[in-house]
Image 1 (cartoon, rainbow, N blue to C red):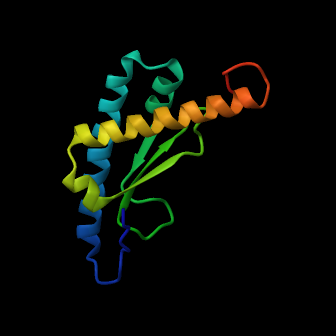
Image 2: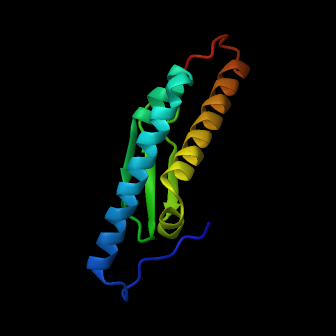
Length: 124
């Protein structure tokens, strides 16, 4: 994926419209992923429900939306999605990619917790 910069040539009103559109599409995809996760583990469902979507990453000048997760164990996971990828993908495709990424990262964190020897798959 390539990230494009927001330049001085870009009209602010057009940037705002695309950011809002991207945020709306990503929000829809996250909701769809959370709905589909009904049979997933409680941790995966909790992480998906804690998602916060923004049309432009805070403090950045790139044409991308960001999905941030607030629940453990993925509090530090931020998924950046270039606007052109969001615009060309369906909500279903985005939801699938988001859910797969969350599941993979939760499994990785569980594996790390087990390898530390604390004997549980729960997170501190």
